[in-house]
Length: 115
Image (cartoon, rainbow, N blue to C red; front, top):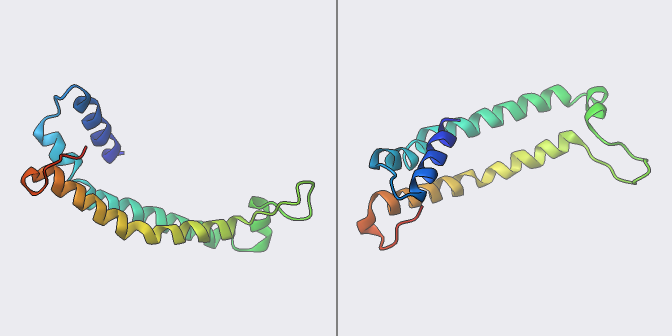
């Protein structure tokens, strides 16, 4: 939530070209702590959910079982496995955010300011 408040405050003020330097610094610096904390919290929550729904009796309540009219199956447990695998993209995104930070906070290192 803190990240969103800073980001959207920055975007709103930037529309009027009045974003203070402190807010710009916060926008491009707070992620260093908040992004890994958020990802860790999400991963822990997903893993705990997976442990809870793993037993078949519980799992079936959150899944669409075959056969059915639509001939479509969905297993919530395996969906969460796919979601966990998507988090392997985290290092790439984190590195990209550092690149954006350098471009914005060190304008001499880049000729174009990125918002």
